[in-house]
Image (cartoon, rainbow, N blue to C red; front, side, top):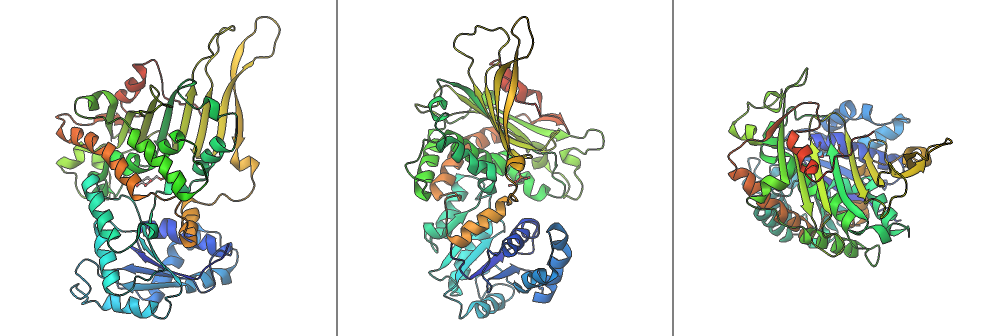
Length: 489
Ligand code: BG6
């Protein structure tokens, strides 16, 4: 494909996301020859850095996290980096800097209107609207411009709509790229290939053969230093509204007619619209919230270091949630989709587990139903647990054995990080792996009633000791119907 020259303007460009994910991803792209020679990265922040300061910061903080086999190549990468101090939110002449930041940026971009111009907003969502408006007022939005929005996109349906309206007043929908980095993970894209490039799965991919689906994103990390964000987010907004629901749509969607950006997103949004709303009194039955407490060396949520002191809000926020979702359509009627995510769990693991039903008529004792496990991380791969006969004379004894595809063992090429893939798609102008406006809003429409019920609830989240698999309620959620979370390695 053509590699266009681009000016990538990153607002929040010195922040955590930029230093940990975006800049390493850009360096990898550069190293693989996927950035045009003149492509520039212009970080914007309030920090008052010079280009040299910013390059020094990246040299100090990023260099060790990427493979630098050729120092000249690293220097060339640093040479692409620029920094401009911009004050957003006061209007372009009203900010504390009287608009000098915008003027400096305009000067840097002037004469490069023929390049792809990408505004990457790695900043809190309340800045999205003001940023777009001010960039427009400063005359920076060209026909070749795109804007990338990081999650969270709002904190409920109303705020998401407002942000979408504000951004939509300046950019066309086809110029807007809403990131959900889970969509950039290899196994997630492989899910579509597995489903739609193999004949044997599709006939059994429905309620006749599938008992239930489990989608887990478990993390060992806590939230040190993140209380300011996390108190207002919680696991439902931070992980379920976006990452877990995206995995659910890809698992459940109908086959699209083409591998085409709109065809795929059309099918995904239909799944979101078919989700049965969980509201009011049902919320207690179908959702679980938990918060980790200190255990051993691990602090509890309320004692995480490096944060502002806990408030009343902190004790109400969920660091774990499990939900029994239902998709009301022909294919999935009666098949529960269990979603689960939490901080400070005993392992880091994201996976989709498709649990098949038992054989219609069992002639051997001791069989267990088939299970397909798509592991997103770590050790990406696909495992199908099938029943086999244990070798030996005498009675037939059954044993579940995995048929296993490990990407790491099968393919030797380096697996790109999600952000690398997605940044490449932004540069190439391909929005397939980004969330369309209607998808984001349909997801909030399902989340909102759960948030409302939790807010109104008298009780607090169920405590679970740090380093465990969540509160008892999460196990009861499945246990009630004789099911259990998939826990094997
Ligand atoms: C982010 C959340 O979107 O995803 C974080 O804000 C979470 O809280 C992270 O830790 C998990 O991403 P990954 O790629 O490590 O599974």
